[in-house]
Image (tube, rainbow, N blue to C red; front, side):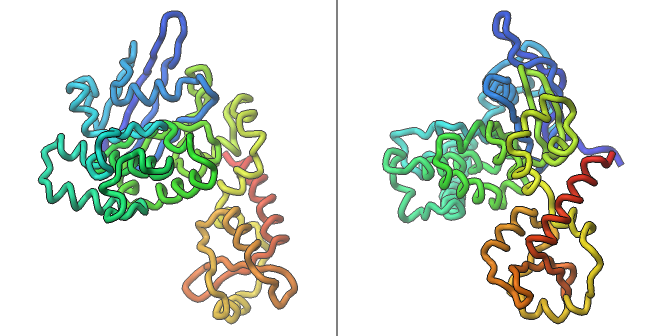
Length: 340
């Protein structure tokens, strides 16, 4: 069978401003449904690279293909109607209501009014902006977090196959930012959408990315899954970039499936009898961080220490305490760091 076309393919993209090279010879592929995070220090070329994907910035050389089609094969305004775009400043039209802002692109594409109204209501409800309350309001009547939700709804309104996000949560306070990130991850639309997101927030990158492209001075330093950059850095820059938050990132990057093999053998019969009294065992795909958070909210067990359970099958689960979890976590980190 032929290999399917990637949703986005970038080949040898370069952009210069006078004597300054903002992006130099960058290439990557994003498969359909994946989220690629462009990460790096300020001024490394993340936003310039993102804007070349929808021709807000024209490259000096290189090629951008969206679903196999060269982006220069159609006028920029038509290209952008098929690509969702969210920026940090949101960019809502101040004289439009929330519903009118969300409907902008579907109207340009000629959608029927009833379809636009239904889609607008659907997205506002999913983003916790009940349309009966918010649809008729103007952007100036909304909080920063609410405006960002409207911007995301607008980007998704026409169900585009590709969405570009430039620091979309950067201007929000930490609590609102975490809440919107959580909503973002859970949106059904994004499970079938290809996303490219710019951020300088390492935690955000690890929460949202399938792949991370780490840039420095316009050059690619490493491209790969978050855990690969963390556990097998390609060079000293990559290693230093994550060093300050290494432990916190490892806790987020490693799944319970990674640590279960490092646990000592135990009696499965005990698991069967005990799980019946356990309210919510964790799936093996949960992160070590999620297990630690559940442990911190768990009362002491009969054995004298907090215990959480990992679901192994429909009828069995494995107990984890702080001590067993962290010992297995340490062994897993060492093993994964040495694997080819």
